[in-house]
Image (cartoon, rainbow, N blue to C red):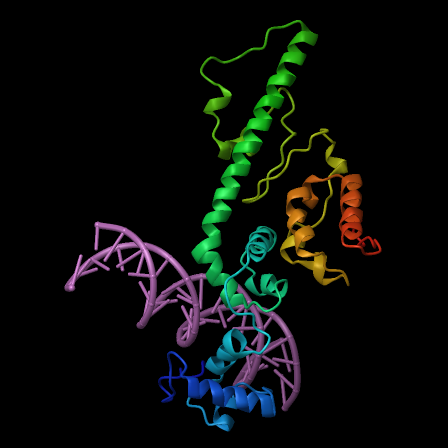
Length: 263
DNA sequence: AATTTTCGCAACCGCAAGCGA
DNA sequence: GTCGCTTGCGGTTGCGAAAAT
C-alpha cells in the first residue's frame, strides 16, 4: 500500500488551528456533515488534510465535548478503567461522556499515572501485611497441631520479602497455591483456598476486550464501576462469589439483575 | 529579572482494521 | 484473495505557559 503524502508535501497547513479555520470547519460540518474526511477540507476550502480536520473536530470542536478540569470522580474512573482496560483510551473515553481519548491520554500521562502507581504501591503494602499476618497465624496453629516449633530460617523474615515478591513468590505454610498472579496485576488472595476447579476460568483477554460492558445493555454507574476491580477479577474468584458480585452490581444500580452468559 | 526546567496539551505520525472494488 | 482507500487508534512530539533556580 502506498502511503499518502504528508500534509506539508502537499502544501497543506500544519500546526495549531486558527479561530477562522475552526469556524469554517464547524460551519461546513453543521451544514454537510462529515461523510468523507479526506474530501472535506477541499470542499470546505481548508488548507488542511482530512486527518487533521477529523482530529480537530473529534478532539476539540465537537459540540458534545465537555471542557474544563476533570472531576475527582472522573479521575478515579479513569484509573479504575485503566486497570481493567490498559491503554485503550478510546474504550475508556467511551465510558466518560464528553471526554475524548486524546484528553484522557493526556491527563493520564500528566497526572494519573503517578497517582495510580502510588495507589498500587499502597495496595501491595497492605496486601503484603495481610499475607504476613495470615502466615504467622497459620504457622503457629500448624505447629501447635503438629506439636512442632515453627522452623524459622533466621536469615529470612517477612520483612525481607519485598512487596513485589509478596504476591507471586511468597507462600504461606505448605500451601503454595494460595496466591495467583497475572501479568502486572495484583491479584487478591483466594482466601478459602479453593481448588483450581473453582476458579473462574475465562479467557484472560476478557476484561481487556471490555466485552463485559459492551455486550450488555447495562452500564454500571461510575461509582459501582469503580468497585468492580476492587471486588472482583474473574481469574481469581470462584463462581459463587462472581454471581453474588454480579447481582450486587445490578441491584446497586437499581436494575433488574441479568446474568451474563459466562455465569 | 533572566534563564532554565518542567508541565500540559494540541497536534502529528504510523500502523492496523474495515470495507468496497 | 488482493489491492487501494479511509478511518480510528495509540504513541509521540513540539511548543507555549508556568514554576523553579
